[in-house]
Each structure stands twice: as C-alpha cells, then as structure tokens.
Amino acid sequence: MTIRTDTPHLLDNPTIPVQAKLAAAWTSLMFLVIYIDYFHLYQPGEIDEIRGGTIFAFSISGTLMSIFFVVITIPALMVMLSMALPVRANRATNLVVAALYIPVMVFNAAGATRDYAFYYALTIGVEVLILAFILRSAWAWPRTSIVPAAPAPTASRHQGSM
Image 1 (cartoon, one colour):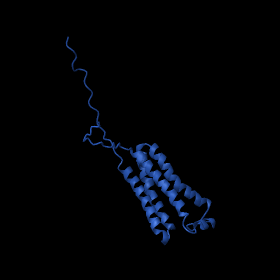
Image 2: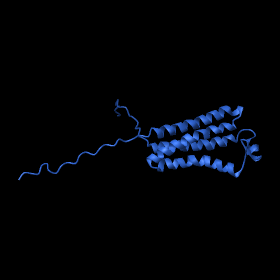
Image 3: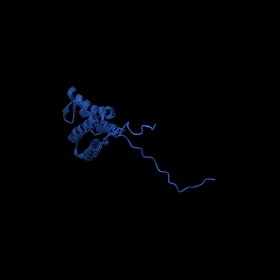
Image 4: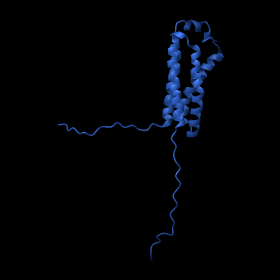
C-alpha cells in the first residue's frame, strides 16, 4: 500500500559558477557563428560566388581566411579562458571581448539581402543577446565581503587557581 503525503518534491537548483555560465555562453556563440556561416551557403548563388573567388564582395585570400579564423578562434579561446583565468582577469577579459564582439556580429548584416533580411536580423539578434548575457554575467560577478579578523584571545584569562 502506498501512502500519499502532501509534501511537495522540490527540485534542487544548485548555484552555477559564473565561470561555467560564461564558458557555456561562449560555446553557444561559437556554435551559432559556425552554423550561421554554414547555413549561409544554402542561399542561391553563394556556392557559385565562392567558386568565383568572393565572399560578400570580398576577394577570398589568405588574409580573409585568417580573419575568419580569428573571428571563430576568439569565442573558442574564451570558453577555455572563462574557466581558467583568475577572477579579476576573467571578468575584465569577458567584459572587453564581449563588448568588442557586438560590432563584429552586427557586421554580418553586410551580407544581408532583402530576401534574407529576417534571417540576418534573427541570427544577429540571438548572437547579440548571448553577448549581452556574457556582459551582464561578468558585470554582476558576485563579490565576497572581507570580514575583519576577530581579536585574538588573551593568554592572561583563566590561568587556573592554585
């Protein structure tokens, strides 16, 4: 026989360290950047344009490919750095890189055509929201208060009676 109680079973909601939240956000951003670029290839004529040696009217060159590499390497490194850097450096690095990355993500609108305006607005919007989450998480990093040490007990108290 099962006895039913009215005690609710609450789910545990453990605190997630800020470093883990930041690493997860950078991972999400990195995957979005890769997939958005991949899905871009599905637009009519894009493969032919790439075969012709251009991407968004930029000539495909070693320099352009190096820029693309840096654009995706930064979020990949931020995943690791968010978990490995000391707190002060971690906070500062996340604030600076996320702030600098917002214009990089918005620059993707340069390749937008009227037919794909909604696609670009949606993808850039999600990327900027993730970067805003990173900025908010790093900015609001919890602080600990410094509690002054209690005075040391004196040795002259209770020296046993003889």
